[in-house]
Length: 388
Image 1 (cartoon, helix red, strand yellow):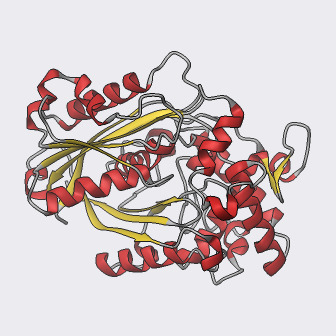
Image 2 (cartoon, rainbow, N blue to C red):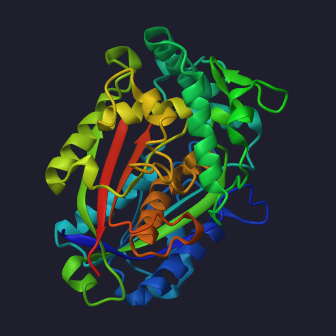
């Protein structure tokens, strides 16, 4: 446990018409520093997670964090990117700076502003997280990529529409009590299961309720070397943090196995000397409901092809054996690309310190996080535990 989360901040996610990318970044940076009980001068290094890919004309963004306070001037600041796992890539870079003893305290910020981009360009930008020689002409953009995955899964294992609707309904129900969530509405199973004018098919068997939202938003955490963290207000330690990168072309792997996700969970559980039974909850990457379903199998909750039973039996409901996405997940919370992984870590820290409000999992002790970029290409797993 070389590093701990000692403070955080989280903006609302959604269509934030009155916000700028710079404003989102600077606000959460300042709030996280204050929440940690430190001053800007105590920060040794800054890491910004910002995917961009055309969403912002300002592409050189690392130094925008310095706008939060003049005392951050001359601090090393770096922007990192790894598709939809950009936020977790930023967290990992911060952790590695501490592990290398190059920093004692690191400010990690994740941000994205997506909704000011015209619809067709949004799809084009997101498709940049796929392998363009194979998937560049996919109809419906990245939803089309996961539509193909869902169709292939249905072909191999049978129609899983009931399970996907159950996952969507669960996450929307959880999101109702999340003050940061973009969509705070309990749609119910029947609405999610039924094709309608308000819930049309988007790609393959995926309906609108199976797809995460286009969002603006930002989140930040402050990381501290653990001995330092123990002298501070709170400390949520990393029992494990693993990064597994897989092939980009889906043709080079079994896309229904999410092997990078499986390897990431295997390494993280081994490093933490824990099992899934030790976890109080998991925040996982439900960019599409089919992704959450396959992730159940990859993390070891179910055998291949049997993830549907986990959803249908309520295992991952908020009151189930292992609550998954008590925040509402990307499905309800929204998915501002660069912010997502940082948000997952901030919300997990809130759970473990009992500060999660309406989305609180009772007696949460250990939390797991899975954030991925592309179709299980960039895979990050963290396991967190409160130590103060």
